[in-house]
Image 1 (cartoon, one colour):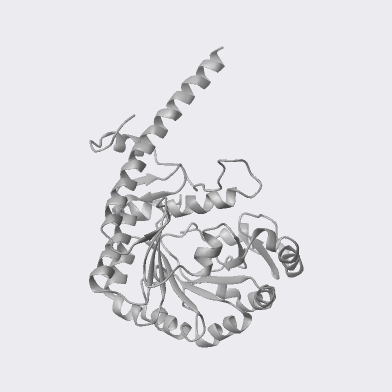
Image 2 (cartoon, rainbow, N blue to C red):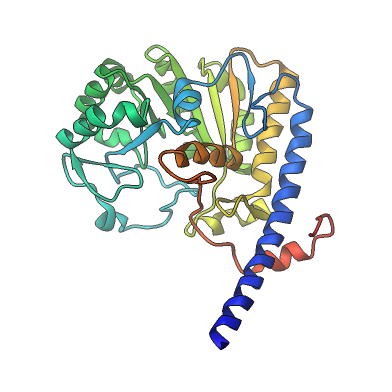
Length: 349
């Protein structure tokens, strides 16, 4: 009896905490909707989970593969040559001893097993068309294992899949970019926040324009990146970049203390935790783009809402109605609920 009573009390507490989270989430999204109304030409799905602006549509890697849950991700390495404040592994010096991917093996994100090249080919041959239309090469710095990627990338290309790669851009020399293009890579995405919009990487983006149909930026949005991006926006746009994805900054256990200055945080659908300011900064960029009339570029609000939207598509694969795969990586700090309860601009109940 006592155990049942405790379970009931715990459930009531959990329900109350969720109501607090939801009240703030509702306010955050409402404020974003007001910003969106003021962006002329903003393109959205009917339910307004996605939003982009500019001259064109989303890339195939984004619109046809990622947003529809029709993708897989391939990891080749746990090596990186930058140390980003927003990284899931920020400050960890020995993570490679725990997660090192052995030589000549690969991992699919979310899958703990290691697979050799023959295994990966089998998945694409047998399961591929049923589940995916494309593959992304990501995590850490994939170009640190460039030669390991190329043969498998060529095989995947020959089977008709769309491929894109995420990079901090420091190793994106003309020689390496040509190798990736020759192997069949369709799209390359530069994380400019990783190098604080370095001139070297901006130059590499300009070179990439020669080799890829889609040259993109995908970076988490926070104050430091916003300031650097706006300061160098002319040089960045002059590279010919055609898609810029501003990701809502996700906070992780090892990175959250790096972003206290970003201000209040919230959690979307009990998943990702982000500074409220992050997405507001994205729309600050949209406002500048509209005012200045940026041409031949698409700006994408890659928000937590978008991640949930994608998660519903992915959750549709053989699961029950109402399922999704969107989830977070950490719990809210204990102080969160006290801070939210002090606000006087939220609707309760």
